[in-house]
Structure formats: structure tokens, C-alpha cells
Amino acid sequence: MNLTGLTQEMALQLIGRLRQGRNVIFGANLFSVGREDWLRGAQQVFDDIEVTGDSVVRFLRGNYGVGKTNFAARLFQAGLARGWVTVYVELSDQVMLHEFHQVFSQIVDRIYVPEQVDNKSVQAVSPRGFIGVLDLHFRKLRKAMNLDHGADIPTSARSDLIGRVNAVLQSGRIHGEFAYAVRRYFEARIDNDRDTALLLESWFRGEPGVGIRGVLRPVSKVTGKEHLRCLSAFLVGVGYKGLLIIIDELERIMEESQIRRRKSYTILRELIDNVDGENGMRRTCLYAAAPPGQFESQKGFIEVEALASRIQAPLVLRPGLVDYTATIIDLDTAPLTKDEQLELAINIRGIHTIARDWHAEKFISDTELKTLVEEINAERTYGDTRVREFCVEIVSRLESIHHDS
Image (tube, rainbow, N blue to C red; front, side, top):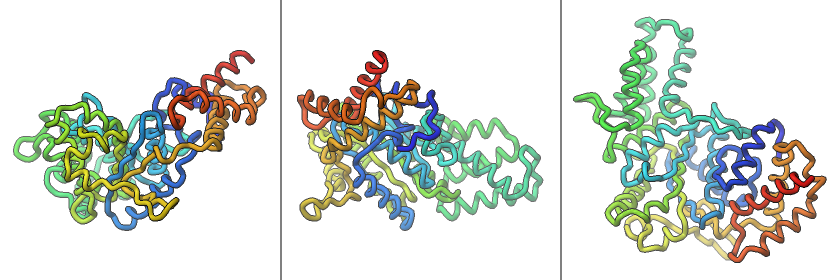
């Protein structure tokens, strides 16, 4: 664990989130351990996608607290580190899968790009969003054409700039309303037409009722999946290596009515069928996090047979040998070992040392941490220690020792 560059402010933020049992996306790589085989499998999937141009849908399976969000955060950081655009979306009462335009709106709004985050980043930064991607590309085009920032663009350069945008659209087979909106947005930026640019920003975000009569319908649950395909192709076309989408809290679907559940699961099935590199999304990896019940319950994936048939459990090639690139990443089968738990505790102690500006190792040594790990496991009435609660207990103990020191 390398904590060089981690400030006290950043460390305090991390410790606060861990103590409260909150999700940690930024900074998860600074303390996380274990599941290395599954992470290598994910990196292999990234490698394959970058070569083939195809896309995949994978599932993170695990009980509450086992570390699904932590694993997703590590994927999030891994994607950014290798030049992918990454998105993290949580389903909620306002973001429902059966209303896919709501999910599409979140994807468009919550895009992060490699330029804005590094591996040491703990500070939660605002997502760039697709509009930010368009603006970045606009600035890159201006620079490539030796056009000063803020200077007026002459007519000849205007045609050249729009031609370069059209080349990206054509190479990605991006047509229809999405292509029109992208092209029109760049034209609005060139012409300093703020009203049109703001209208198109609202359209890309899928805001209700936003469109242009006769040429641009509002984004809907019907058009959302096609726009997602176009979005992925555009991101690849402007130089990003891929698009990683993580959808968390999938268990919310089971709380919906049967009609809504079936619509949600049908959309998932359609997403799986829409990931071939020829006609579907381009270089996209979509991870959906769900508890075991969603794979087994009558209100789960099996409610739509066409979806259930497309979700394959990890293949055991022979005893002790698992296909770590399979559709399902089953974290319940990969609990942290006692040594990994100790390593996790040591990592958290290192962050706590910076957060409280003290020498924590002088007050609780590795040997004492090992004893604490054993105590935590002995006190649990359930099976494997849950990662979230484990972190809470370690931080709480460190806070108590610091208070008494």
C-alpha cells in the first residue's frame, strides 16, 4: 500500500466513510485487498474488449456487506487507469430500470473520464458527464486546428471542424437523432449559440419533454438503448478505450410489481443481446450488482426465462480451477482470508495514522491487530466476516485507542 500524497484531509474523509459503513468509490484502491483472481479476470475481459471491440454484461453476486460495492469501486478505478470512461449508477425510487430513459439519463450525467481522476484520488469529484466529454473534444479539435481558445472560428475552419465530428459519427455508424444532436451541439458551440447548446444539454440528459419538433424527439424508454449504443461508439471514436457502466442496487427490482419486474428483466436481457460489436454497443462492459436471492428467487432473474438462460454461473473447469472471466462474479465464494483481513486492517491503520497524525502502530502492533481480527471473527454469529462491518469495527477500535492514547 502506497499512501504517498495522501493528505490528512483526504485520510479523514476516508476514515469517516469507513466508520459510517458508507460506500467508498474514490480511494477504495488505497485499502482494498483480496479477490485478486476475479480482478485479473476483469482485466482480461477489458483486454479482450479492447482487441475485439465487442461488449459484455457481467453480474456481481454477493450478500449484503460482502464487498460488492468495494469490488465495483476497484473496477471503477481500474477502468479509469487504463483509459476507459466509467459510470457508477445506483437504482432508486427516481432511477428505475423499467424506465430505462432514467438510467440512460444517469449514465449521461455521471460519466467520469481518465483526465479528471488519478489512482491516488480520494476526493469525490463531480462527474464530467457527456456534455463535459463533448466540451473536451471541442477543445481538442480547436487545439489540433491551431485555433486559440475563445477566438472566433472562421468559415473555412468551421467546415473542417464539423467535418472531423462527422468522421467520428460515420466511423462509429452513429446516425439518426443522436448524430443530429452531437453535430448540432458542436455547431452551437462554434456559433456561440448558448440557447441551442443548453437545449441539447437537456436533451442528452433525457429531461422530460425536451426535443426539437420534427427532428429530435425526447429521449424515451424506447430510444434509450439505441442512444446508449451511439454513446458508446462516440466515446470510442474520440479516443477512449472503452465504456464501463456499473449499476448497483439491482435488488430494488424485486420490490416492484410483477409488470415492472418483468419489464426491468426484459431490458437486462435486451442489453445482453445488444453487446455484440457489429450492431450493438462498442467496447462496453456493464456490471450489475445483485444479491443471491435475485438469482434464485421467483421474483428474480428466473421470472424472465430468456434472461435466466443468458446468465451463466462461473464454470468450474476442474476442482479448484474457476473461469474468472465468466458472466457471474460470485463474491460469496471468495471471502477474505484471515491474512487478507489482517492486511486490510493494516491498510486502514496506515490511513488512520495520517488522518489523526499519530503513530498508530506504536499503540496497536501487527500482532495486536491479528488478535483483533481473530476476535472479530469469533464474535460473528454468521459465516464469513462481512467486509463493510469489518471495516467499521477496525476504524472504531482505532478511534477508541487514539482517544485513550
